[in-house]
Every structure is written in structure tokens, then in C-alpha cells.
Length: 245
Image (cartoon, rainbow, N blue to C red; front, side, top):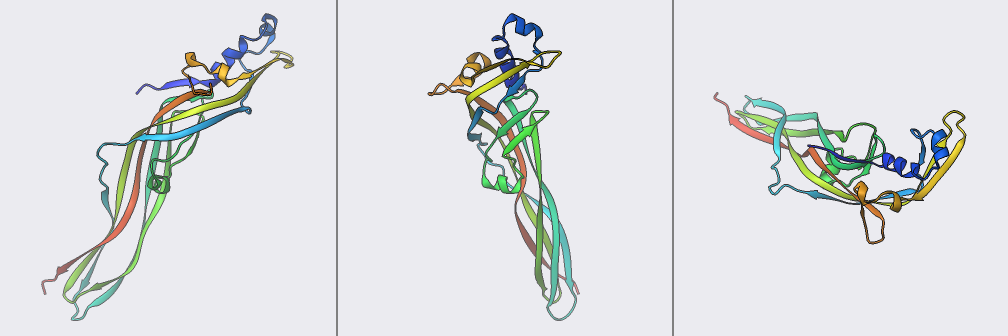
């Protein structure tokens, strides 16, 4: 799937450079301006997910199996104590986004509380390279109970956990406020040649892929895909089988 990316850093560079005089451009280090983002504020809107029409059914997995055999004339009590661990994963991939050079910074809300708790969902994403982020979380599943086996029977105990999948598209509308400053230094002496300061409303415009809200602020609709696999519940299944004595 092709990725639609808008580089904020490149947009700011091209915008600010147009305000330099010819003599300034001649001596300035145009390739390495000092961009200050501190006065720009990014507002992250609601993360909206497109859910599948038919939710996937949880898949059961047997983590542990034990058999208890009672050949005695009386019921016997056995202790079942064990713990197993599984890994949940969550991958966020962007198909339309903005970057700061090669870096992506984004804040997302999880699709539901279970994904947030069990899948290691990262609400704040900061990537230096690449346009997808995968997080993992280790979950412990355990049992500590007594199993009563009748005389002449074998009891099979299984520790079962159910795993669910989430696979959905998401959108999040980001809004930009404030100003950005760009300073230029001399190529050789590193002395300050000039500084350009302007509002983001002028810098980020429709020709760069931005829209405007009712207040005239630039907005950008980020799109992506969320794929998660996570455990949801556990159970202990007991099966009794009569022995042939």
C-alpha cells in the first residue's frame, strides 16, 4: 500500500527561504536551518476506527495439560498449580501522515479498553525511521486450585486461554496552532544571518495537503491501520474418564 507523507520540515524550509534577501541566501547555510517548533501546538482529535462488519471470534489455545489418575477406592485430591506466559502484539501502520523530517510523532487512542490493557497499545508514537510501530506485552496466565478425582477415574485438566484479534483502519484529525521560527547561520562563521517567524496558518496551506477549520487553523487528516492480537480470558477445563479396572 503506497504511503502518503507530508514533510513539515521541508515545507517550513521552503517557506522561510523565500523571505531571505538574495545576499542572505548567498551566505546562509540553507541546507541546515535551525527550526524551532516550541511555539507550535498540535491538537490531536478523536481517533476514529472503522471496525469489521463481523467481529472475529476468540481463538482458544491450550497452555497446559495435566492428567490425574485415581486407582484407589477413595476420592483423591490433587493440587494443580502452574503459570504460563504469552505475548500480545499491536502494530500501528500509517498510510497517510505528516513527518518532521524522517520522524513521526503522534498520539492515538486505543480502539477499546481491552486492547489498551492487554495488547501493550502505545498511545504516544515517536519513530525516528519507518512508518509503522509494533509494541508487545507479556501476559501471565496461572491457576492454583485443588482437583478432586473420584475413585476409578482419570481427570484431565487443561489451562486454556482465549486470544482475540483486532484489525481496523483509523483516522485522526490533527490541528495546528501557533508560530514557527527559522534561523539561518553563516556557512563559514556560523554567525546569525536572519530569522523568519510566521504563523502556521500561513505556512501550512491547502497546496501542501492541509485543510482549514472554522477558525482558520490548518488541519491534517492522518490515516492508518491497527492490527492487534491479545489474550482476553482464561479457563480451566476438567474432563473425567472412567478407568477400565
